[in-house]
Length: 242
Image (cartoon, rainbow, N blue to C red):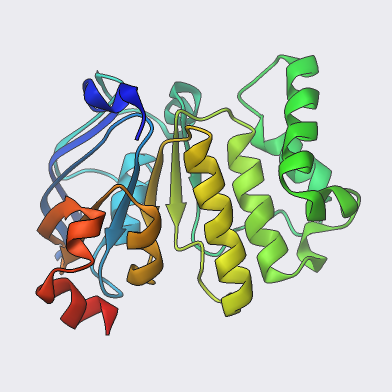
């Protein structure tokens, strides 16, 4: 964790409640992420993990509660404004522009920016970080393997130069060898100082890369603490670590 993590939280979610019609998806959820941290949110399918990320990105409406980013209330912000403030999400399922090239997808990731020379430099930085993408820069994104698409989704999000990266189920549908590679990338980003909020069903891997962790069950936050402590917590081990 960076020294900056000692200050005020970069992201603060307080008493967040989300409803889909009559369904209470989240109830009084609170969490925080400090600069330089990797924080993971674990829980079963349908627990509300992705809904939490989508609410931070302002994709879903808030019923009650408050979301602050860099000490600014973003509860009523538009999704594009949240990206401009420095929050980028890598969505579950990757959501590439399948009929556009790898390069075009990266350019799209910088849509909030106008510094053309710096955008080009950042594209080259992503190609250096993900050599596989550099080899396929002219290839249509829809023809990439699942692992390559996940790399492209992460690289595309990094093109906005985010202060906070939201990762939603990065291991979903990938072979074990590719999953290890993706988590190696997360470790690399952490070491480079990227602040990450990670939603992940593979609790064991998530707890290995995270500084702190929260457990979400049926829309409620039930356990929180340092990731190393949660990995040895009997409740977490029984429910999520097998």
